[in-house]
View 1: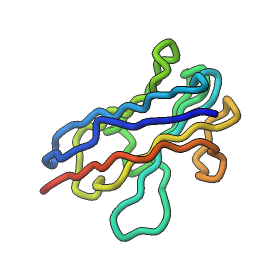
View 2 (view 1 turned 30 degrees about the vertical axis):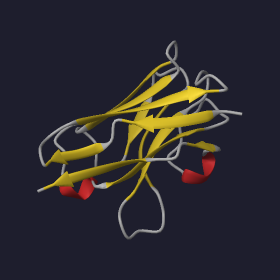
View 3 (view 1 turned 120 degrees about the horizontal axis):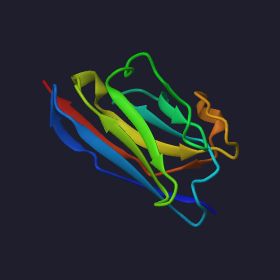
Length: 125
């Protein structure tokens, strides 16, 4: 069974950057599609942030983060990344990485089977 562990969250100022990592154990990341989701404070559901195909060749982003965030993966290191630049206070949330059973990236939360425990990102104005 795959286990995912996020790290890299913390406090950042608006305009700053953070890099999240998601390390996999138990099963390799390849050839499965991976995604990042987030749950802002006070909201019940997790919203899509970014996803990447199993091979790493294709990515997709939520409109709210497009041009600011970059998803990438290193299958040799079994690690997924999310580089977050030009952070805004509205990016404050718990960020989760997730893995599909398919190599095709998806924006739908319910397409992902394995989830990490989440890492808190707080952006101050």
